[in-house]
Image (cartoon, rainbow, N blue to C red; front, side, top):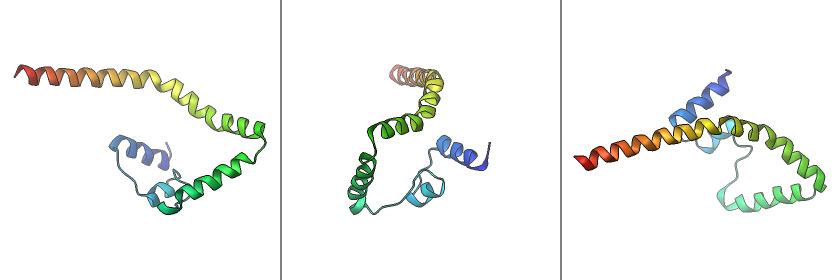
Length: 100
C-alpha cells in the first residue's frame, strides 16, 4: 500500500478529524472556501456542470461513480456483518448492566 493509502487507512481506523488544510493536502478536498462564500461557490460549480450537454454530464457521472459503486457492492456484506457483531455486543453489555 502506498503512503497516502496507509495514511488514509489510519485516519479511518482512528476516526481522526481533519481540518480543511489537511483534507486538501491528502486529496480529499479540491479547494477551501470561506463559509460565507460556500453556497455561492457551490452554485457556480453547479452552473458549470449544468452547461454541459446532458449525455456528457450523465456518462461522466456514471464513469466517476462506477468504481465507488463496485467498492460498495463488494464491501457491503462485511459492513453488515460488522454492524451485526457490534449490535450483538451492545445488546450483551446492556443485558449485563440490567442484570446487575
